[in-house]
Amino acid sequence: MARLAGGSGPATEWVVLLDEDGSPTGTQEKATVHSDSTPLHLAFSTHVYNGDGQILVTRRALSKRAWPGVWTNSFCGHPGPGESAEAAIVRRAFQELGMTVDGITPALPDFRYRATDASGIVENEVCPVFTAVIDGGLAPSPDEVMDWKWVEPAQLVSAVSAAPWAFSPWLTLQLPLLYPSIALRKP
Image (cartoon, rainbow, N blue to C red):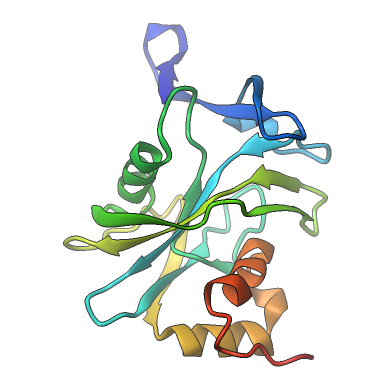
């Protein structure tokens, strides 16, 4: 959920902070939450499929603060205070990719990870993973996405196996859980 800063101007996005048990403890502005000491917070990850069963992978814009330019799952985000994961998914699908989705389904409800990028920015998230199906077209925001591609799931697993450093750490952790029957090659 976004609140307007001072009643006008750009919306301020709020992130839900969590304790180690996953219970909400407060909120913090999204713009300030990611640092070298990011507190545990609530997020979500979404893998979007088309009618042919292909998965949408996106390359993060170079202007992104954390993991700029890496390939990742379709999109991620943070539910605001009082916002359901499904509502946040619909909101971020439109904001990041200019698309609508349906068939939102929990895939990895207990996914949690912590990772540090090359600049020292930490992701520290309880991050349930969802799948969804695209409903219509795609118009990515250049502030969020610099490139995108529809791929077969086995093709994505193969690419991540061959070059895990080119992908977000959350995607490399999620894929073996989403596709356990497709073996990841060991480096």
